[in-house]
Amino acid sequence: MPRSILIVDDEPVQRRLLENVVNKIGFRAVTAEDGEQALELLANAEKDQVAAVILDLVMPGLDGMGVLERMRDMNAAPPVIVQTAQGGIDTVVSAIRAGAADFCVKPVSFERLKISIENALKMNAMEDAVRKIQKSASGHFTFDDMIANSEQMSRVTSLGKRAAGSKIPVLIEGESGVGKEVIARAIQGTSDRKGKPFITVNCGALPENLVESILFGHEKGAFTGANSSHIGKFKEVDGGTLFLDEVGELTPDIQVKLLRAIQEGEIDPVGAKRPVRTDFRLISATNRNMIEMVTSGRFREDLYYRLNVFPIMVPPLRKRRQDIAPLVRHFTARLSLEEGRRKISGIHRDALELLENHDWPGNVRQLENTLFRAIILCEGDELTVDHFPQISSSTQPDAIAHDAHSHPRPGLTGAPTMIAPPLETVVHFDTMDSHSPDPAIVGNSQSASKDMVTMLNHSGTIRPLDEIEKSAIEFAIDHHNGRMTRVAKSLGIGRSTLYRKLKEYGLDQTRDEMEQTSG
Image 1 (cartoon, rainbow, N blue to C red):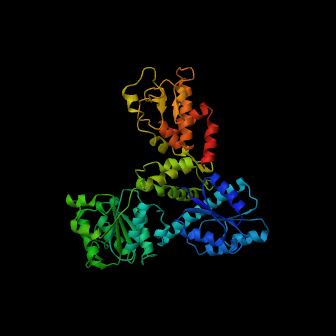
Image 2: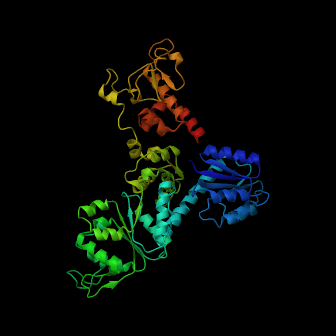
Image 3: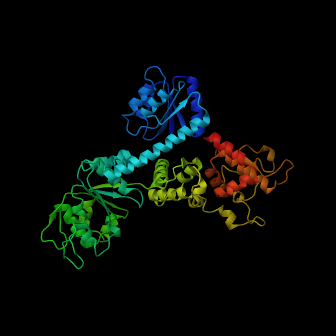
């Protein structure tokens, strides 16, 4: 479901006009007749569902300024674009001071409102990205700051909030790149240890001969090269949270010392004469099958049960596609800010659809790196499909039609993949895996229904190949409402090939019109 823009205006005609503009831009319009109704809608809306608010200042009852005042107390309120028929400088200043992102004078043009919405969303996304970075660095990052809108992640956040209320050891499981450290930070930021040290240790990256020293510390002269003492991560995190990432990579001897640290709350630095007490909250993470490692003897069973007191399983990104769009918005805003590409306002809906349809084997980390590359490539103000060539190529069908590869037909070498099934009188695009023609229409192009592309012309002879292909593309564009990713996928061709054929057949205008109306 597309994000919504809330229109707050007491004039029905004005609401309808704004609703048409919002729909045309590509958002879903939600309307309110007054300020009280608007605040109620905002309070009941799902997290991040309302992208922006278009607010009339002059309304009976609670006016626009009153709504702005009340929105100050809301957590992560959407940006507000105020509009009024009275465009005095005092009114503008008051609205901006009250928290408005922009100001428009009625009647506002389509282009002016479109630019206002884009700028407001861009600025809000950047501010949100900066706010999350700051909260993460200060140890105050919470589950409310996480981008986890999907149902699959609701259980994760629910378990995380429960775990934050105690000192219970937590084991976060999931594929590489799903965001296990983010969840660990949210647990700490929601607990009574918020603001205290949060130290991450990647157990798989520790040098084997230095693991014990890095984790538990050492005394001066404990071994060759120990010219000074080192307190170690367990003591360094005293009072805070220690996050052991890829804990399954620890060697058996270190597992023994870790078990003692968890049980007794004290560590034995290398070369120390007595144990050292330390107060820490332990959160571990792994992408391994820990039960299998325990069974095979690679991980201590007693340690596993100490770590796995409160397990949290994080689903991969392909199983929570609802989170992709908000993640894309967040990463685009943050990375464009970090890279000085402030002119990048967002991502085209075709490109977003492409990303939403990808399986992301590397999960959130792969998505972030893919957007990083796209932002570096982007020279305009919007990310498009052309900026994701690797994703675009990987989402093409793995093969054309099986029969076309197994039994190629003479004279069809290099023919378009969309007609790879046997050439019959009619190609059925709603049943492409069925190669049998409809007996009711074989040899009779006049009776072909609107969901079919005829192979015969009016004289009963086979139509030229380019005419059939053009008709098929036109049908697919209409069938998928101008969504070019789905068009290319259903035809079995890449997007770049599709765009080239659109240009060849003069269908560029059709595509542009469909994209405007489908928004």
